[in-house]
Image (cartoon, rainbow, N blue to C red; front, side):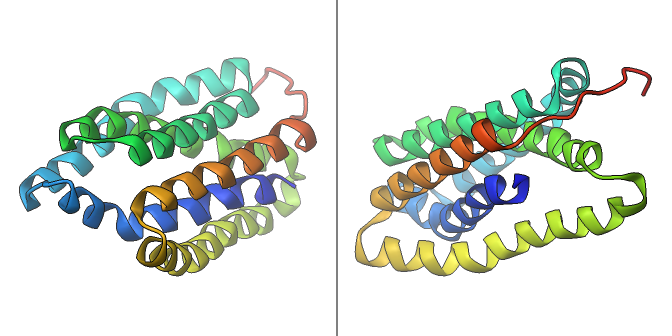
Length: 181
């Protein structure tokens, strides 16, 4: 169930990243600015990852994952309505934090949900979810962007994230942790 909840994030990531640089260029970004925009997201994630991991240890994996998914939803909506390329920098910073939160908490939740003897298998299934999303997403994103436009691509991605977030909130149960880890 957890993999079904995060699959929309992976599909949407593939959708968005297959066209995002083209969208930035369409808004007037130079090649150098596009590089700096992506650097902003990576730096933001690198700086916040340990803090978000600690938050996941202290308050639970599910709240951090839900926050990350909400972050992606807001990021994709912001891209859809963005009018100036300068806004891509703070949006990308939020996206970097969302990736850091998802990265810190998702694998930990998979480990928490899985018996010790099956964790390798469960991590493989979780990784497969990423790959499936990145197989489906770029094709779908390229098709939608070509036929409906960039902004509609981001709106569709936001809608899919909402489905994944609802799945996480209503059907994924976080097991109690002993606190001895």
